[in-house]
Figure (cartoon, helix red, strand yellow):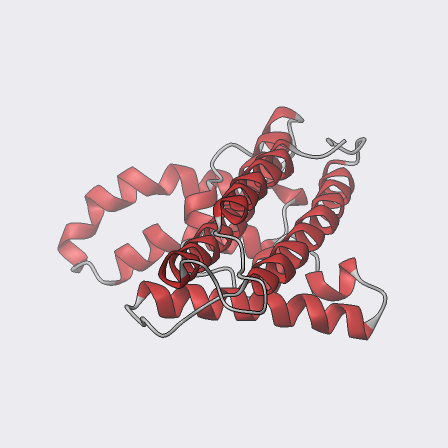
Length: 229
């Protein structure tokens, strides 16, 4: 059974496919009936697909957190990286605040930080927004970092057996994110053909389907209970 996050992602992929179907048909012998529309649709598909991939990462974090909370997981079972990431904002805020103004911040944040590092407390203060505040785009490097925090050392190695297959998925996701970033920064030369988008969709689907199973297994290990999905 897939997670709700994966179901949501697949609905997003259907949205991209709907755009592909709206693309004007190629002219027999080469070229397109409406090249400007075809180009605009390709660019829109890239932006949508990258957004759906990024949303999947946030969403699966939220599901992991919900599972840990509902299973009364103790903070001592959390990976240290998760506790450090959640603790970082108030600590950074304290570090840049003048000494005589820190009392209010300490009173505001000390309880949540203390609970997070009290091994006998239950998980109840984690948020995906805080844990992923550092992530600017779902590049392969960012994806590795995001899932390493939960104990999956290299998510691409974890979800593939073949080095060739692994390299293909990484390459397509990197291409997708690079094109999306260039489009977002106003680069009007960026294009994505129908075949490009199909290859990006395939890579995103494979990555998320396989990562979904890995995340479920990690929750089972952390909570010492059955897989949540």
